[in-house]
Image (cartoon, rainbow, N blue to C red):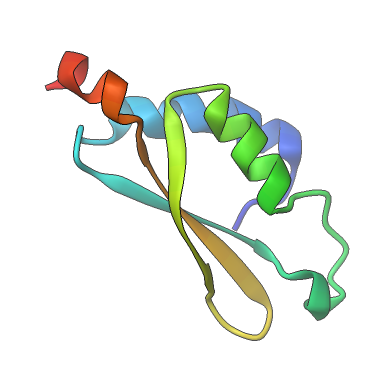
Length: 82
């Protein structure tokens, strides 16, 4: 579960580099309704991911506390990774 935006920005390039071209990564954060204090949100994850090589393709409510985004490597960058 993502805890800090700085950690997220540091880890996203590593996740993309270790993913298979057709692989995926799920990123979770505390949902606003959970009232768990967090600076990480759907928007901060998307902003950090789009600055790298990942793009979100699905959003989900994982449970009553967490939401998640399914991230994949952008199509235009997959050919160079295979």
